[in-house]
Length: 196
Ligand code: ITT
Image 1 (cartoon, rainbow, N blue to C red):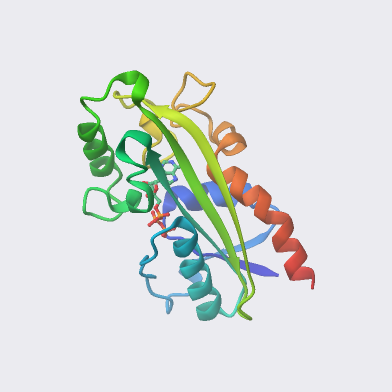
Image 2 (cartoon, protein in one colour):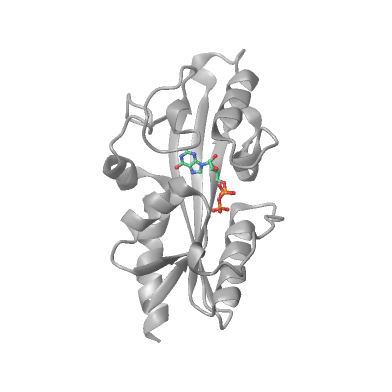
């Protein structure tokens, strides 16, 4: 059965098409009648469920959504759910990253701990839902490095790594990432729910 990928973020789409390669995935471009979903929740889970249910209702098909972000300890977990619009402009990856670097410019390098978080949600048109979270701990670096990935990848080094997630090969990032962890854990729940 087809599953709709309820995201418009090209960086996520590329990663999720790899991570969910065993599924019959269709993109939102096949449902032009479905508009943007307002992310009014205060948690990743709230927003992932809002997106998954809106797309499941709009398409009449099972839908999976991702709500994710970067949580910086010294900023009390911000930008968190605001990661995509931290600079004030949704999807402005470079502006978001530059603002974040400015906000931590006085913080000692050994106090730049952070983690990526991703909530993966599945919703069926019937209203059934499943939710799983994945995280990737690490720290920030001040000088952006690497050309892969998207968003804050050039300034995030995972625990146990020297390279930023933008310097990892795409498959290396998938193997450890918050998104890889969340969606690999969601996959058996999707199979189970679709089989019933
Ligand atoms: P959709 O709602 O259409 O899925 P979005 O970009 O608005 O797209 P989110 O609200 O979940 O999605 O925001 C995710 C933001 O968090 C993303 O734009 C990046 O700034 C950041 N982010 C999440 N995962 C990331 C990753 O793997 N690498 C780098 N930045 C990431």
